[in-house]
Amino acid sequence: MTYDAVLFDFDGVVVESPSSQRLSAALDRTYEQLGRSEPATETLQALLRGDFESIAERCRSLGIETDAFCAQAAREMVRAQCEEVERGLRSAYDDVAAVRSLELPLGIVSDNHPSVVSTLLDRFGLRSLFETVYGCPLTPDGLARRKPDPTNIETAMDSLEADDALYVGDRTVDVRAADNAGIDSVLLSRSDDDARLEADVTPTYHLPSLSQLPSVLE
Image (cartoon, rainbow, N blue to C red; front, side, top):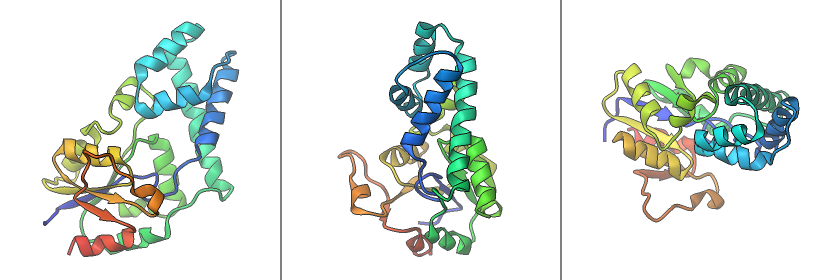
């Protein structure tokens, strides 16, 4: 198969994934600053699902403005992730070096906040590799575009003028998003624990490392 662009998920593919405990702690701080107390883990799961209605209902029950909550949560979660990097708790994967050899237009399509993606790309000296970068802000529209919604993949393809792209991710939802966009997918499984798939999900390629990606594109 010939492709005219390659798109990558970010967390778990280009850089190590953020700590769920630190993200929950960031949401704890968000509630504290708004004078409220609520189970942060449940809110984090709603954010990861892109379930804005659940978040809005939670805010209504607590008597706080949803926009104010999302803005504060975004600040805290961005700060928490940037601090992870500065403290050496999170880094880019070594096998990203293989991406440098690719001669196709490249892009990032992530569910993480755009500020985090841009900051970490700059921090690890990877920004010049990718011609287009899309993330999901903590807004109703941003959460609605979380995968498996294909909108950001399709928008990235348009910006790269690509008709046949390949999407590289590390989760079942990435494969579903590629399917929904009508393109092929790579499921990256760096360990046996990552290799579990839902029965109705079949990636086009299943690789243990990005170092094998150039051979797929030959």
